[in-house]
Image (cartoon, rainbow, N blue to C red; front, side):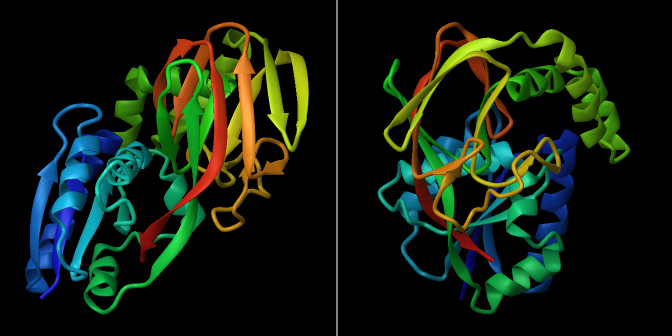
Length: 280
């Protein structure tokens, strides 16, 4: 018997997570599969939930499915990486606004097909993720999409606080909110000073506008911000490819991690490539 652990953000994508959970539950019952549900009730809660679930898995026949947006997948990944079983595979059912990782990984969006894949010997693929160490506060975290400072983080901040996002998500045009805020960001985001070090070389930019370290091409619901990037090439990209990157800003700036806001602050980050096991 195989068992499914569902890690769910009901509020993702303006309640798309709740709708997706109902669809997946119906399929699991029809397929007569054992499952349990772990609901996130506040921002960031999927981190400790994922840690606990990963610690308690005792069989190769137990699978974890994250149901939510890219931020939910980010939390689950960080929770698993912090667990006693950091190589626990993750399946992901996209139910957010942007769903950029699902786009990059070409993931299944039909709940019936996903569950049947997991029921009948699923494929485990080792894919890249980013990892950073904050040299100011000592924090270490992982990301599946990108970490951005400046323009894209400004867009994320304005989008996450936009009343239009909820309204547009209800009629399945949530990505349009990003487009509107991209236009606003051109006016609102100032340039800033940043040092970027990679491959033994340091460059200083006086008028940076967008500094994004990315794991794959997409941002903001499908915008191919860096088409050459890939989750399979074992490199991170920041207008060029490298297995290790260091970024330092002189002044506080907006930051975003997989579409989730980071506090506006000075950044001094050291990036490297990591990986996780993706269930498909």
